[in-house]
Amino acid sequence: MAPVEIICKCACGSQNFQLRLKRDEQVGLLTCAVGHHSLLLDSRDYWADVLQERRPAQSRCRCGGVLFRVALEYEFRAGGDVRSVSVKPTCSECGREQRIVLIDIKYSPTELLIANPLDPIEQPWLQPKRHEITSLWKPADAERFANHLSITLGARVFSRSASSEFSECGIESVQFFPELKRDLLFTNMPELAVPFGNEPQRSSPFLRLSAPFHMLYSLPSGSEAPVHLLHYVQYSREVVTQGRLEKQPPSFLEFARQACEWLNQNFVTSSGKNTADNLEEYLRATPHLHRSGAS
Image (cartoon, rainbow, N blue to C red; front, side, top):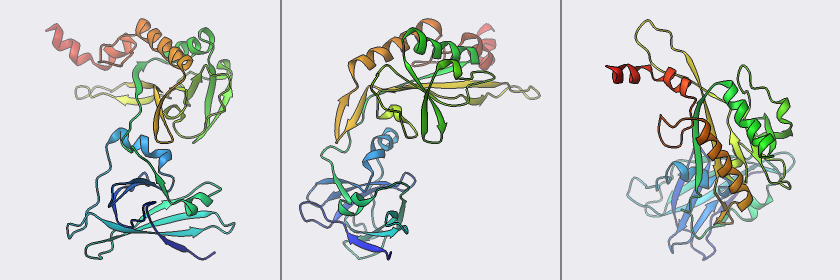
């Protein structure tokens, strides 16, 4: 199927836009000359995550212009689904073509990407409240926490089986030694479907226990740096739905509160706010702090 090119047009009729494009994440926000905001293609699925870092910078032409006409060139797979979209901005002031942004599409169906390339949004800067706790743990600590969520609090357990796939499992089937190998998701919501995506806890009532990151702290010359296991415990208090902030279900928020309370009761916060460390692991990771304190 031959490529198809269309020109972006706001619902108000304007074809001149301010641009905020995030090339690595392949998302974008277009704001027409009248001031109406639209997310580009399927950017809504990722926009809230991008905002957690910072607002994408506003595009500006070398002539100083900040308004652009935006063409979208669609490439298709043999079956008719969109394979990729090339975003081609042209400065409305001087006509200079700007750098093309290529967006890969890896799902089906894709009809909406052609029928509605611009997704209107009234409040693009809304950011949901999220909570994150970091934990320097031994493998047994991760096992204790997971067992508390599953057995004591009655949570359902999901284990990551592929890059963006999870499957429900029993806690007894999860391997914690020599370390947890895959992310786990927990929820007390009985009707919730099997999660999908890289970080379902950002958009649904799940609490995530990450597989550990290996941390190496600097030691005096000649010393062997031990490996420390750093876990993340994450959940969202709010999610963005159809451009609006919505609180997570009260029962899930109570479940998450109980989980955090258990962490506070069983671990220490010596390394700062929103931490829950095994004290022995914290002391092992920061011996220089305690030597200087003792002197």
